[in-house]
Image 1 (cartoon, rainbow, N blue to C red):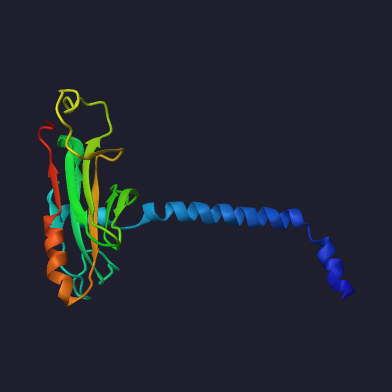
Image 2 (tube, one colour):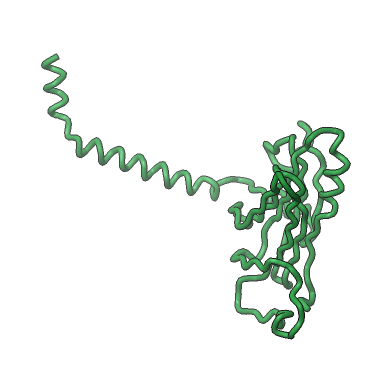
Length: 194
C-alpha cells in the first residue's frame, strides 16, 4: 500500500491533465474533419441524377435499392437540388403531421434550414431562396406598392444545395395520402419576383 502511495506521489498531474486536454482537442478536430474526408457525399451521389430546381419523389427504400447508404426504410423522401445562380428558387410543401420535415442542406451536407410538422395542425412551408450576394434581383412587391405574396424570404450563403422533404411511412393505409402530399411539393426557379 505504501509503495502505491509513493508511486502516486511521483506522478506529475500537470502532465496527465495536459495529455487529457490534448486528447480532447484531437477528438474535436477529428469530429469536425471527418465529414470533409468522406469519399462520397449525398450531393455527389444525387446531383448527377437530379434536374436542378425540380422536386423528385424518390422510390421506396429496399435492401437492393437505396439512393443513399443507410437510408431509413420507414420514411418516404422527396428531393430537390436547388441552384440560385440563375435566380431565386421557390420551395413549397405542406407538413401535415408530426414527423414530417423539410431540411435544406448545402453541398457539404451542412443543414442550413429546417422546418418540422406539428402534431396539432398542418404546417405550410413556402420559402424563397435567394443568392446571398450583391446582385439586383428586381424590386420587391412592397417597393412597387403591391401586396406581398406570403412567402418567407430566406437568405442563404450556399448558392446550391439539396432540399429534402421527409415523410414518415405510417403504413399501407396512409401510403396514397403520403405519396400525394409529396408529389404536391414543388421546387422551381422564379423568373420574375413580381
